[in-house]
Length: 288
Image (tube, rainbow, N blue to C red; front, top):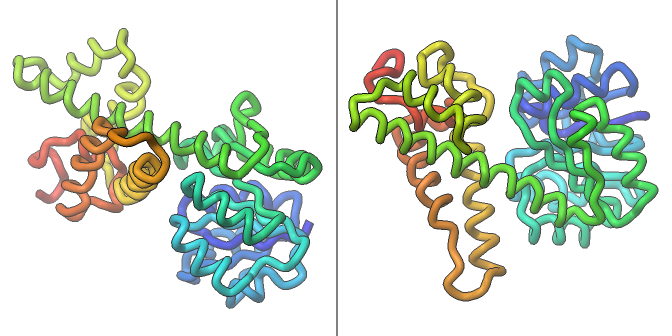
């Protein structure tokens, strides 16, 4: 197919690279330098989003959030009538409803995972649309992105958005739990390494294993897999969703705790670092 791929940040680039072997790809990004890897891999680079979309059989978007979708896609009515629109952007359920109402060919396709799984074709991927034929087509298209056990078709973009937010809520709250476990360990004279080891038999084992290299200083948070800015943006989507649709008195206090930790790091200039930055002692950071 002739595919227009709009949004070639770190995740978008990894997704687009998987499509190049089998499709004719035209890419666009607001910051043109971010299309360089894809151009070197054989993609054509368009000067504008409209140029990228012209003549495309299908459009894929991978943008930072719902406001970017409104600005780049809905505002200029960019998607041609009848052209499937595969949106991998993390959005709220209400956003997904809005986009589907505006563009009947909208398919919500949020991905669950970070850059490593993206490179290896091992992401979780939701494909959400009520159109069964279109859902089948997109499931086949995005299969190279996904762990086959975690590729899931659902009957609406809204449901796909819920699945993605649930995954990132679990990630953010677990990160805050690991932060507090490390603080408890430190207060009792337990080394970070021993704390990580003792967490191996708990519900925090997965995150302790995944983020242990950052805690030990084996990896820098600079240029990390999932930035503090990105997960904080998603946390705001979750909090707004509960505020808009839940029964009176509902809230997400554990997530708010995680968000406070993330925003403290963002305020300290670490927004583009891996969100593991919330686990680190200030003195352990390079150059500080």
